[in-house]
Length: 198
Image (tube, rainbow, N blue to C red; front, side, top):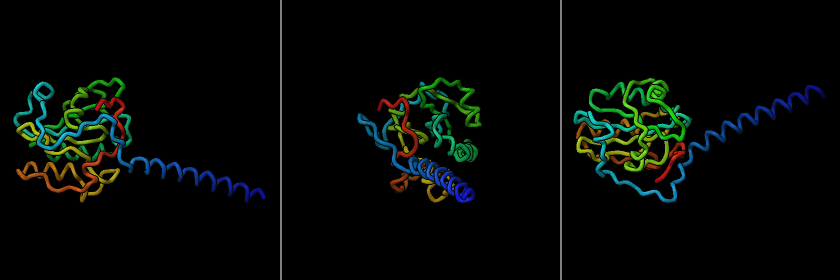
């Protein structure tokens, strides 16, 4: 009797752990709800970075929209680091923090493990049409939005076939028009912005 009770209890606990893991994985596979007053921003729209990133040397800019409290932002950390390592010679990178908590530049650079510019100007999200994290916005040398979307279809950014931000970076650097990307590239997934005013 005692063994049956312990077995039933352990089975119940294991089932609950599995259900919690499944639920949290499932939640982040759903598209982020679009804010009620969201205004879409089309590719090709002029993005004003002059005051926000003054020395971008005529290079394209990748804005990394990041919330330190978002699990998805933490999951994509190593993928983002690999993009910076691979493309930093040709592209400027900047982290745009979207959080209602206060952080310093050093806090953010420590969390992402990179010494790159950090902005707390949340108006960049509105300019680029971003309402969730993590998101990438790639601005070309004419200051026009080339790509705004997800880094990858995989939660952990491990699927090379759907490395959307990397595909966009490669296309831009080869002076190609943005390739046709999967719906998952442009539909926002991840965490809703805690400060969303779009």
